[in-house]
Length: 233
Image (cartoon, rainbow, N blue to C red; front, side):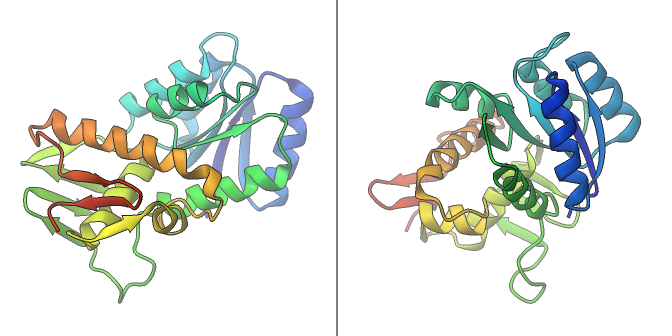
C-alpha cells in the first residue's frame, strides 16, 4: 500500500469526509483545496499517490496532473475525481496522465478500491518473485521493475505507473493475445468489464510514447474482438 496520499478537493465537506475514509484505510493523508497548493504539497511531501479533483481554483486538475508527470520521475500515481462523467472527459483525464478516474458522486468504497489497485501498480512488481524476473526485455524494449523504469531504443520512456505495469505485462507474453479482461484483472485490479475503456486509453498512450522514441508503428497490436498483442504472433 502507498502510505502517503495527497488529497486535492476544493469542496471542504467532501474533502474532510474523503480524508477521514482514507485515514481509516491506513493512509497518511495531506489534504489541500486548490491546484497551486497541490503542487506545493507534492514538492514538500512527495506523495505516493494523489486523489485529484478535476475542477479546482488556482490550477485545474489537468494542469496539476501534467505538472506532476513533468516534474517527478517516478511520478506519483493519480486518481482523477470529477463530476464530469462522459467518455470524452475520461479520455482527457487519462490523456493528461491520470492512472484512473472516479466520477462524483461515488461511494467511499469505490475510491478506496481504485486507490488500492493503483497502489499495487505503483510497486511495479510481478505478482510473485518466482513468476517473473524484474528485468524484462523484448527486442528494443526494456522494463526494469526494480527501478520502475523503461527504455526503448536506448531512450528513457516517461511512463505512468499504470503504463509501466501494462508494458511489463505485455513484455511477459510477447506474441500472445492478452484479452481486455486479463489486462483489467492483472494490471488494473478490476473485473468490471465496463471499465475496459480505461485499458484502451492506456494502450493508446503507451503506443504514442513508443512511437515518440522511434518505434513506428508501435509494436502493440489490436486483435479485434480479442485484445492486444505485443509483436507478431
